[in-house]
Length: 160
Image (cartoon, rainbow, N blue to C red):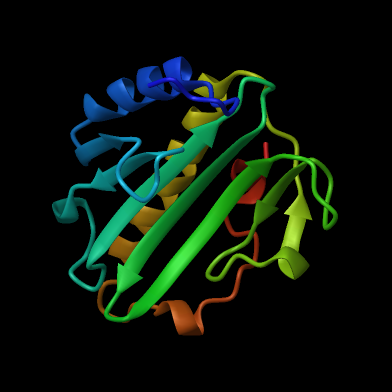
């Protein structure tokens, strides 16, 4: 591709191919138009209650170990999003988590993540699995993103 940035494209493709093998993944797009620095993973709709229209995970990895993973659910015009980051910034430590449902700098919390991208992805997938289970538990009275307040309900799974 002749990139001039410091993307760890090889590792991103490897993680994307591992995700593509999972039943809950509908599609993996590598460096799609408009998001040329990311891998975009779409989740199979049948894994979510009907209130969730779509869910996806986008990520990018840098050669220096920095990363960004963003999980997003779309709900009838609302979104529930969170983000795991490792990068220099002015709002938190290098490793931090942007809490759902609307990640913002002012509500990011410091975190500690594994060094290995495979372990980071495992942590994120476990958190998403917990999220999906909670959504199914609340199908009779779902908590829409506008009603949700982060309470650290998944404990350390969010952070390390």
